Image 1 (spheres, rainbow, N blue to C red):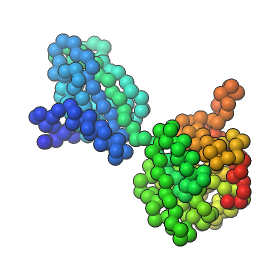
Image 2: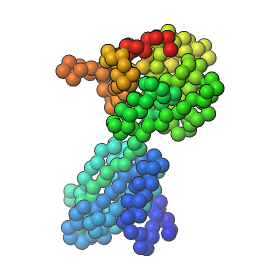
Image 3: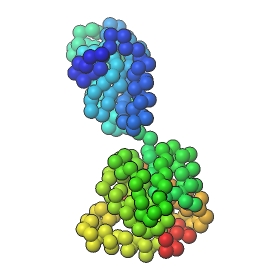
Length: 286
């Protein structure tokens, strides 16, 4: 196999190799876009079913005809990858006219480009009676759930893999003690996680924020902490609290505002998604 202009080539590269690469990308949490030729009219180097996998760095695997057509498809695939929305494109293989790409073949090609983005991940530090139902609910919604069990020795977080926390990873801290939660919080604040929530009372949340401020964390870092955690749904049972936590995570993930749709005539910034009221049963000094 050789590489030309960032494209991995093989004389007899079957299309299933491209599909296998899509699966492998998902397993390694790498975003890719898959371009598939769906229609060809007239003269064209492409054929229906030809596929091209495009990675975030611009490298490719597969074949959709080569030349200027493949260059254009690579470009639109990267746009789809950035936008996250599937798109259909038409290319005219002529020098002039609508959708023309400046070639002389004379045909027309339609290509469907679909992004394959990493499954959102929920990291639960501690688990326990709320963590278990939270994991079950998150699995139903479609999260890749990772529970980091805490060693019996107080504050041991050796299993927390902060290197794997990306901008599609949502973190919930609910260990058995505030020391471990604070230690985990400090580690996760160094990651690009879009959500870091911590269970506990207002008093616990305020004290930990004071610790962070005293140690030089700026206001922007401290503001990333959602604590007390969850939306105020009013429930007091473990599963109900877990639901309120997942509701807040989903609100942040999708840019919601946490209000009833029947009363949602005005939108709020995403930062106001959290009602900042602990679900009943959480304000217990944990």
